[in-house]
Image (tube, rainbow, N blue to C red; front, side):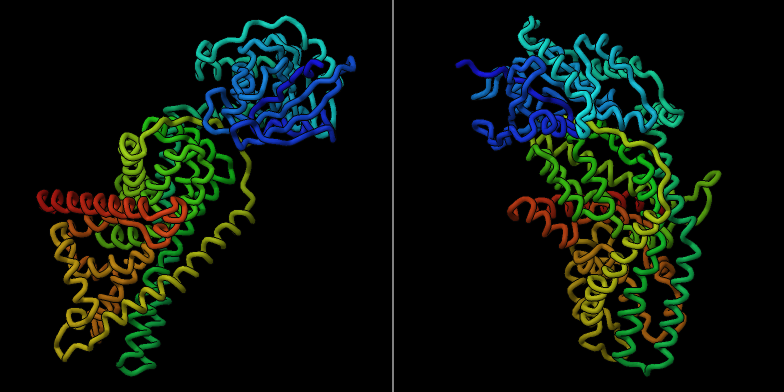
Amino acid sequence: MSALPLVALVGNPNAGKSALFNALTGARQKLGNYPGVTVERKAGRLALADGRPVELVDLPGTYSLDPASPDEQVTRDVVMGRQAGERLPDALVIVVDAANLDNHLRFALELIALGLPTVVALNMVDLATRDGLELDAGVLARELGVPVIPTVAVRKRGLDHLKSELADVIGGAAAPLRAGGESADFDTLRAEARRIARAAIVRETPSRRLTAAVDRVALHPVLGLLLLLGLLFVMFQGVYAWSEAPIAMIEGLAEAASDAVAAALPDGIVRSFLVDGVINGVGSVVVFLPQILILFFFILMLEATGYMVRAAFLMDSLMARVGLSGRAFIPLLSSFACAVPGIMATRTISDPKDRLTTILIAPLMTCSARLPVYAVIIGAFIPARSVGPGIGLQGLVLFGLYVAGIVGALLVALVLRLTVTKGASGGFLMEMPKYQMPRPQDILIGLWQRAVIFLKRAGTIIFASTVILWLLLSFPRAPDAASQVDHSIAGRIAGGLNVVLEPIGFNRDISLALIPAMAAREVAVSALATVYSINAGDDEAKLERSLGERLKDQWPLPTALAFLAWFVFAPQCISTIAVTKRETNGWKWPMFMVFYLFALAYGAAGLTYWTATAAGL
């Protein structure tokens, strides 16, 4: 008995392929694995319009015949007759999403070029119509050279017509199978797909035309990058310009609380704990909550409007030049909030070398924990003056620090891909969401969640680290007229560490602050505030001064600039090291990460300090 004709159902992810497979085969399905791989094989029986039975196999969704994962490799091998235990399909049913036609047609053209009998299922035409897009299937069929059948799989519309066309093409003459190397290159196929998609449009709403017009700028390789840089520039200007009033209010509340405690309690260890440890220590970090919320307001707005995916598209080509897959963009983007979820998000990257590289550079993305450090140093040492219409010098410096982190990450990725994580990299395709107006309640909920996370962090990790540091700074008690910090346990530890850090311009107080900063970056600020609060003792004039004012008196400008450079590359917090250990199944790569980040931070800080000193700053 001869085997049934084999029809392969193939297409991009999210084209409705599985829904169409279920609608065509119903309960006549069987599951298993392809020989030699753990990729699921989903097959079923289908009766054509003329009554002939065929075997229908649902292939994993893929974007290209150049595979980037085991799933995509199976799809390529099946349609080209290379899969062990699987014969060459007698026909293909290519499923495309009508609402994302130009993206899906690129792969369809690649498949049609193979020369197999083919029918295209133009799926989800109801959703395309709902969104204001009407397509001419006849034009598509003429341009592609194969039958095109409009379908709505979830409502079983167009299935009879699809089975009728499939009956006609099975058994017909087909062109010889083309070798994979003969197909057109990616850019040529993409351009042809866009041309065909435009030719097939009968009607589209003004909103869709507006989206296309905006995307011509937003996705342009030059104009789009300038737009992205402009948005980031405005974001960092806003972090300073909009936060001045709320920061002043929080500082006033902290000062009032400190004065109330000082007035209510006699001089002693309890008052020192509350004023120096809790209020001045933790309060010095909480004061930067407005800046963090402004930063996340911009991020949430960019995500809600649909622009963030466009930013990923723009960065893909740049990342490919340093050996990274475009799939690395989202984990790296997540790392701007915190490296921990960013590293966990690398699980979506199938290539192990690609994934490892992304994990190792995720800490170089400037996480929100660095913002308080940047803010206090920039506020103290960079003048709050304008350098152009609407351009503040402080926001410009902050923007530069974020750019330095990104550039550093890309350079490190390039070095890693050429050395310890050497291997091929692949691009990726993504579907652009519609532009839309953000819902105010969604933005407010997102900001509320970020505020709660930050305040919980301030009330737990930062509070505990500050209390421990206060204890180490407060004991043993110094004799009268002696410096408490010099006499303390913490002061002696920092003195030993400063032997290593002094050549790059760091003083003992900075060395001391870097130790608890391993728990959380923001603790560096609370640590400095605690140190200078204890140093002030009962001096009312010193106690009333802000941390920034105290730092400006204590540090030369080259030291402040070196401190900023250190935190661009600083070794990560304990949480990041722990999650890296879990994601890489060992201590080898976390230790490698700590070592290379320390070396980068030390080198960057030293170079900054020596250059600034030589320039006479």
